[in-house]
Amino acid sequence: MNSPAAGARSFEIKSAQLPLVALLLRSADPATLDQDLTERFGAHPDFFDQDPLLVDMTGLQDPISPLEMQALLGVLRRFRLQPVAYRGGSADHQGAAAQAGLVRADEASWVRAQPHPTEAAPAAEPPSPVALAALVVDRPLRSGQQVYARGRDLVVLAMVNPGAEVIADGHIHVYAPLRGKAIAGARGNADARIFAQTLEAELVSIAGVYRTSDVALPDNVRGKPAQVRLHSGPDGDKLLLEPLL
Image (cartoon, rainbow, N blue to C red):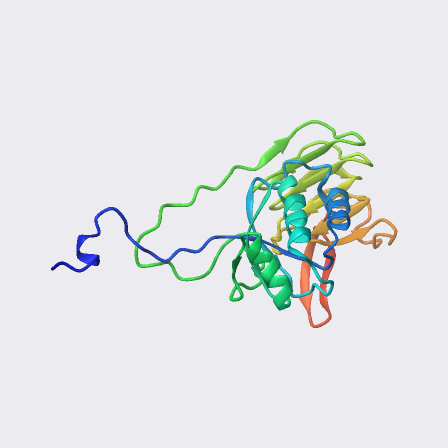
């Protein structure tokens, strides 16, 4: 008699890793989550593109019922996220997540996005990665206009006026005055940078760490060629603003 494995011709089981967006829940209130997501991403309806999502409940203190969990997941799906797994939380939290169809993934951990992975390549030769060309904008951006370079760098060849917003998952290069908002590493790439020919920004942000014009720019970079990068130290992450020589 043949073993089950001997007759298997229609499938092959392999190990796989799926990149997930991770959301650390701090409130179980669907209305609060909807409001906060709208404030953060409402102006960018294409920010997520049916990305698989890990719901992290380690920071959740409020109790949550199965109906509330379903409502929370509905909010996330409206923002084009696809919740597929959960981790952490109390037994009640985990029970509600499991009833909602999420799978348990306690082994998952937060990982910073890296533009150039350094881990060793698998034995099987993978397909060559395809790098997306930078998105190039050659017109001035007026107040209220927004440009998002999803999965790539952004190059702007004209002025970014106050009230305009430029966003990229990678680096941002502005070869003109940058007077609006610039958000680089929008999906967690801590190695992303912002380069400006004339730095006069209302806001600069890298991987969620930001600085607004409420804090005056240092004299050595204000109105001058400069770069913004993220520095991680014992006191946490902070933005460094440095002149370009």
